[in-house]
Length: 302
Length: 188
Image 1 (tube, rainbow over the protein chains, first blue to last red):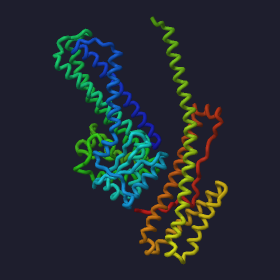
Image 2: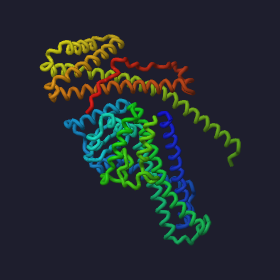
Image 3: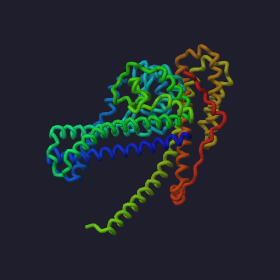
Image 4: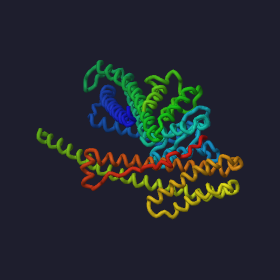
């Protein structure tokens, strides 16, 4: 496939998956109407439920979004890059070069002291972005490979992936929150009263199954979005550097160097270029990153 | 009660508003992509100027070590002088290409001066000049990318309709001359 086709396909996939997520959120809120009816005998108009449910979800999402940057940097234990150190100076140069290629303001450059080869990007808007690389990455990757990695991170920034992923995490969290509250209410109430909308015990079973389903599915969807965005960042990064082999070679090095003791919290994981967590979860529907081999294959076919 | 014909009118109105927004977005897209081109062009100039500004410092640093390499050193200073005195964009581009060639030669020659290569000042300048060359290359790349986006927008439908009315024409991409294609890539 041509590079442009990769990019377009990934964008379409993301839009579709996001629409699905929003639909899921709406259905959960809708179902809450039934729960309120059953548990509290409240027959609240649908419109009202949707409005309040949406407001709660939006607040939740906005709050997680505002704290995203500082928590990421703190969790990673990252420090600003030191221009006096030649390797770190060259990293700063690379980030500047890639930002010119992308037409973005130069992000701040941070370094994470770690033997592993990895990098991540964060920031609320493209003008306030931060790119961080591990000391392992700076030392073990050559010029081309480091350029590929930084190109990938810069693409995350340009594609507003941080926004997309944080909002998605927010929606997943909101769905989980609402669904869990609903489930607990249903269990406590014993479900015997039936409520004004009627439906009886079957309705309750349907609701319970739906909520559990929603929690599970929203998580899986979030992971699917995360993988799509990774492929997109790979493709866009290759376009920036005009050199897919650079990133491919870097991913090869990462493959042979997977860490056993990663730092940083689980929420940060999707922002890294390679999944630093458990080997077993790496290549399944439960992982935030696509399999390294597949990423390398796609890059080399461009 | 709302009647069928009222619903139809509302739907048509919504479609109409939708189309208006869509059109509005194309007008904006053309303007934005054109502005991006201007920005990218200015950025190239910023980097070229940066490079020219580094030259005096470079000359000072190598002066003590490479006194006998008259020709090489003069080529660099001459190129810089013609950049400063260039009046047209074409002259400016030619002068900059001359400088790229002269710098390439200078760094190649510097390889045989171990004292110079050991100097922190020189190393740091070399890093910075290489960095500036990369920035120039990427700025040019971004300019060409921006031109591509603009040309695509005004040549595909419906942008092409707007372009005619706004009198927008296809823009030219930068042709990178042969000499500067091989930017010295120092391996770190």
